[in-house]
Length: 300
Image (cartoon, rainbow, N blue to C red; front, side, top):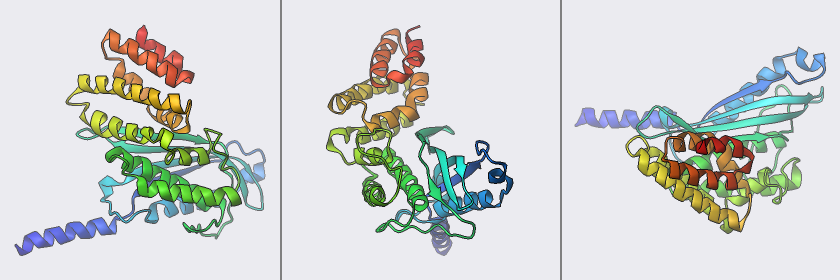
């Protein structure tokens, strides 16, 4: 009995020691910087990369404990386009979040985003400080935004509306940032950070959060055992997205969904029956028209 309790305590202790939610990789690309002196010293870029990564991975974003194998895999690739001696930076950010699929070694992409206005200030020797209740600077709010967004989508993919806590944090953050920072956009811009956060609480597009749950937990997690049922389920889900799209055509979170899932859905439906492929193409070309030519291969 004592040995059993010791094992349990050790297990719980290991989870506390690895409590943080995110396993983060941050990379910095300086190839597009125009001036040699902007690229010349790598010290600030090395420090930026390390500081941002430590901020995301070292901070607790929830009250839950995560074992190492449970952590949410978040990668941020910053392509710097402008830099100044005063520490002003402009960048494009590629943000990707992975989720394991039950019973397999496969990891599915749940977020795959490009942020073209990832602008911030950073000086060597300056820590990144963030507070949920106030806007401090763009860099801390940008990193916190993608931390909370990653958690919201990850939790939603395991439980229906499981990411509510993070959705509220995200909207509080964007409300503070849009009045003080730059590049946060407006709700009517479906690619803006503000619009993506707003969609998560908007009743007209709440259905996309349910889509996230059904797609991952109900369908993808059982694909290995029930591939035919999964394909039929995806068709039903695409019809559900069509209903959301009728209420809010081209909504931000519809775009976010297909930016992450288009290749995967195509791959899954490519092995479906002829009638299922035809139906999938009809839905996909309507809901994600920018990838119509890719989907057209389904009806080859």
